[in-house]
Image (cartoon, rainbow, N blue to C red; front, side, top):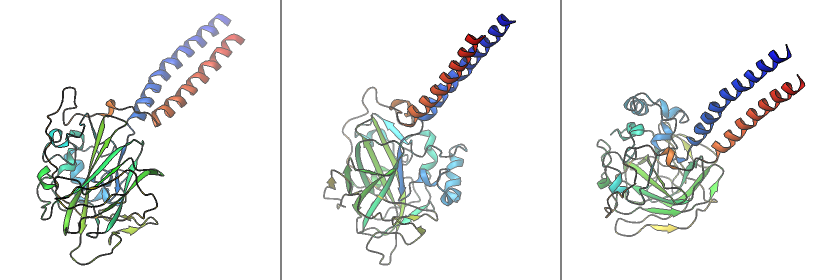
Length: 335
């Protein structure tokens, strides 16, 4: 009888280990997918149309984007990244696919529409972008605003963007769960535009791309850059009716002058709202994609460290597994 019980206990121990091991691996892999950031103010298309986007996710533009994505929602709004670009954005990301970063999993974000969720901004005002980061990284943020006369009815191309960013910020400080990046908006924009943000990491090989649709009203607006649509929160950012946004510090530049560069963000600066779209084009990259670089359209989640949440989840699962094994081993000894 005792031998029979020991056999059953041993079988139970083996079964538990066999069940828990793949579960542990699955949880670890799931943790690595939780990366790494996107603008939430002015709200990016990926975030607005994600399950976390709130009301904007139900707009016609977001529904069309999900349909174009094969019905897949933008659950991983913070994972729109391409590895090994190394500043060669124009050589790697093809025209018409700037908002998706050339990634097929985000192709719905490239739809040419004039009704994307947007944030209202004031020309020439200070803006604090809120760039939410689920896993912090070091790197440089470059902000482009589509050229005057941008037409949102066509796909976003590099020629729609100025040759240089109007603002550039390196290694801004993180406040809470977001970077808050201050900048001065160009003063010569009206109507719908796209605020195109490139975050080139220095702590990983990845570069993140995002499109935030913004609107500059014809009439004179506020001087603080805050939006005139949506519900305001305590930070000065507004919730998109079909828009959203906030950000850390850098100054605007005209097309002929370089963007002001700032080594770090000013967390004390008040966030401001934006809405609109814009076309941008930076000077053509001289280098073609290097060997070993990621082909545009290829997912890169496995190319980065995936630390953070993954380690916590894996550690917790490992602790549960060890506790079960220890309990069964003790039971075997007593029998």
